Amino acid sequence: MILVHGITESLRSWSPITERLSTAGYQVAVLDLRGHGESPRHAPYDLGSLASDVAAVALAVGADKPRVVGHSLGGAVVSALAGAFPLHSAVNVDQPLKLDGFQEQLQAAAPALNAPDSFPLVVSALFDQMSGDMISVEERSRIESLRRPDQEVVLGVWDLVLNAPREELAAAVDGGASTVGCPYLSLHGIDPGEEYKTWLQRLVPQAEVEVWPGYGHYPHLVDPDRFVARLGEFWG
Image (tube, rainbow, N blue to C red; front, top):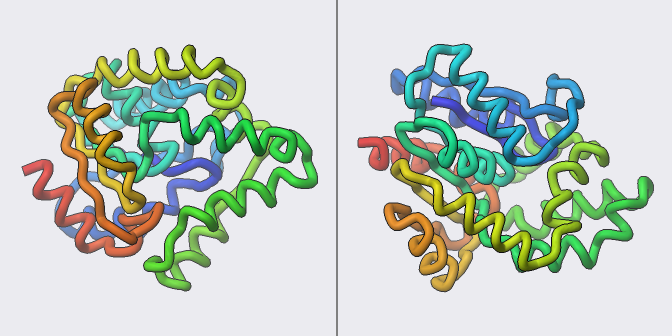
């Protein structure tokens, strides 16, 4: 299986999950997305390019129809991959694919995001808002120590959301989601609402949508044992 991390983070954010999956006998590959961790900057940073990088890793490790799991940005990446690459299954952790609300939030913050001095503060505030209260102090500190908010990379990843007209963004999202053909689990610690479930299952009829109330943006790190067990159930 391949695990894909969230924006500004690195492959090490998966460490508690990687350890448990390996102990359970799974073969696990993790990677730093371009511009993250130890991977160099290499524009462009659109979802198609990031998904192609994950596909290249799958081919390099000889993974035939891998299981892929992505958190946050990684959830969007594995969703894009699921429409273009043969997968056993895809798990999206707390990344709603319907982006109109997120677009409004980002566009309101655009002046601060584009200013070098305020950019890291905006990104930090965004993650603080989503983290939730159930994640342990130690785990929150570990993730914060891994976070490297590179302005060029983040703005490159968010370019479509920041700059595309709302209708164009919606059409791109709908078109991408409708190509997902493999088993798909959308697992959320922040409830995206019943309307989102209806929207997603209209485009991806086989999608399972599950909410762990109060777990925040990192449900897999709030309770890694429960998360790994849930993966096993889904794959089984």
